[in-house]
Length: 247
Image 1: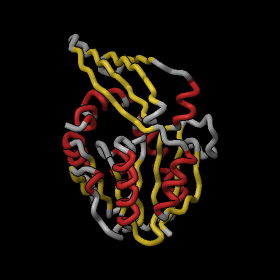
Image 2 (image 1 turned 60 degrees about the vertical axis):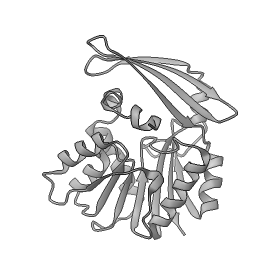
Image 3 (image 1 turned 135 degrees about the vertical axis):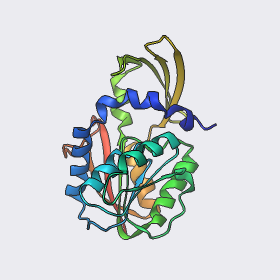
């Protein structure tokens, strides 16, 4: 089993609950729509959509051609259930982004909340090429990723917090400067005392690295922001948010 299929479960959703509420989701979608002019019937793909919070928000605003894909079937089933009462519900598909095979279909593809770059460099770049092929000419690609330089500069090695359902999350971070992978070893202690171990891997891509890869594939970078408040990216930004177009 791939680590992503194990890590992204109900416990992960509990761990990010405070970061992914309706207000934050609405703010992120507002920001997206401020920067990109879309028609209500434009085809949109939510890449690694999770339980569909962004796709559902867009659908609630009248966008009628939304597809969300995610490798976690549980999340897809949650999204489908939430979408059932909408006039034009998004189509949610249980699929691996590494197998994306559409061609010139979408006006917008977006991946928010650090939902990419979990795999080898070869696989990560192949996914970007597949995204490029799936976009219409003049279409847009938006990527929201954490900012490794700021995280590494902070020197953070451990963290802990309590979820809304009283589970305790203990995280231990390590960085391999040769492979460029940041690993999180997570211990979850449920209210019943059950202990669950999970491991999470992220590639430490910087803006300069991603710019090189994006432009080599054919994307034109329109802008890079450091947060959803619209601040321009700088090395201490918490995020790196790319707005790109297909030339």
